[in-house]
Image (cartoon, rainbow, N blue to C red):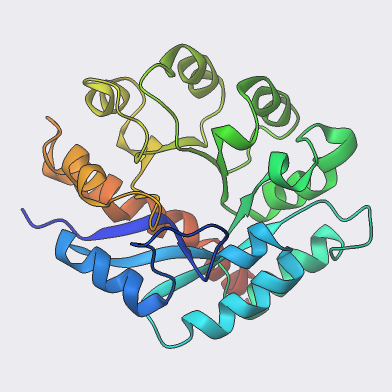
Length: 255
């Protein structure tokens, strides 16, 4: 079966300290992914992480216009006056066709606790906005705090490790909308175990491009001992379902 891969974890734009093999443009990214069978990707702009979301988010919209790349904005709490109020931020996402957000708490100096990011997470939870966060930008305690307060949050933990199941399983048992991005989830038999215990809907395909090679994440899904239907859910179906929050909301508003 030929899988239709949709990458949830990719970056465009020039970033700090690139190595010789680095690439930055949408065309270069798509050319790198295409041989692996990856036709689409959800991307954020390097400037939104390395400089500020107010710079990188608008730049992203211009950069991906007319491409097979779906925009993902970077968000931060609004309290310092750098970002719009959460409801306004989500409204801007809808108006701009932005399907998801990335959070970088460690890099941007905040925490997921309610006193700091609670209003932002509450709005994302209410609107069903998909939220992606690298475990290296937070920790499992902070994620547990956030999900206890916002149990319906569509949260995907990215770039985990091969020794993370003792953290992930208790959280996945409690929170039905918690997912794992696959690029760093290299647990032996891990994909099969998650599918058996929690269902394939809890896994989202990602590559970590341009910092990581896309071949290994593709192989993890392609050669997993699971059904073809579950492979396609992981490869792209689950991400498509997450990104459909905009369509549902617009239909409800038009009704």
